[in-house]
Image (cartoon, rainbow, N blue to C red; front, side, top):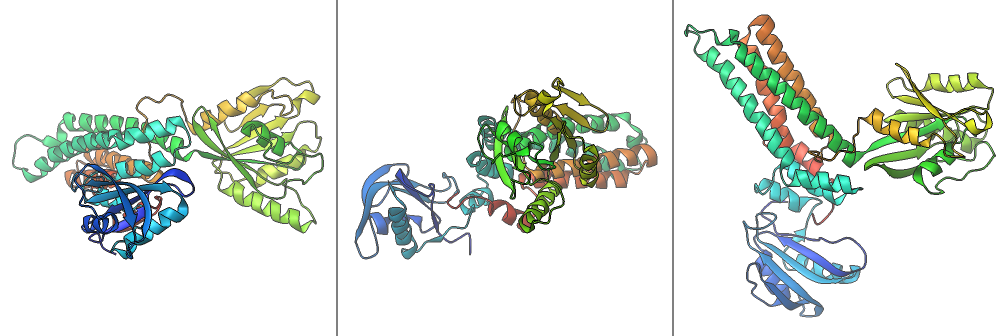
Length: 449
């Protein structure tokens, strides 16, 4: 497959609708459109026409629009054919385009070509996919900010400041005969401190953006009949899980995504954790432990009326030490215990009643607290795990550069650390990136985008 091919795909969602769109991009887009419509299209003019296949059979009637390169989404000649939005009609029209010389576009190939043709950088291309996949208004607004370049501009400003620090240090290395000791100048350390301060601010905004887009995974765990399924239903606001007084009712994994002030939370209800001779229940417990291992946070639900506290302790001991655990003491309405939250250094306890709803608000607020999420939208843009990792690595190298300057007066090593920091910043926008990275990013897009 080559970027010189002309690609085609259905750009609208699968299903039935008033309008469906076929998108073409590449050097033969004009010729293919002429074959299908029988018309010579003018750039940025809409034409009403008939769409025909290679045998001259009319497929549909609709609109054709021509965007000439480089003034198009991909930077190439782009044709859009707007027909009636039925899956059969759209597939017939797509086949006509393929027969006329186009090939089926890969997932994300239109956005990939826009990136390769400098129509947008990598963070903006990713923001296109994030905008489409947004699960809340806050996430959509954050994606738009990234699409408009807010994230890219802040990364670029940070890169410029980093380059300035590198120039200062490398000048001292290149001109050692100068009487002034540039490396002893406190100004360069002050510049690095300012760089770290601005990097931390960018890192905070990126973490908020990642939470808006990807959310957090919360696993509800505990022994049978603690009220896990009832908690799932209460938090999701729907009868998602079956609730009975029979222990072991939940056998399989149930999941639901909810919103807490714009924060997507992926709730997972699991089977009660206990030993059982029931083969099906054993499989459910095995799946529960698998889900627990991948959680961002675990809600350990405990029946506060149950006197078998040692069994709850046994479950808690087996939970992964690397994942935050919140103990939820349920059924307080039966023991005359007020709803409250107790935060200690090593764990948090919430006393609640799923039946009455008392204390549920504490759970929602604590999930926001433990994730570091704030509902303030100002300056938040969409971000991904790879962006966070790049910023973290960049920060490590800048700290290393500062250490080399202060402790060792090693200008060469400090300059190398700053060069590595700049490389990781450049990976965010795609100024420096590997083909493997680009492949992973664009194959996550939907077909036609």
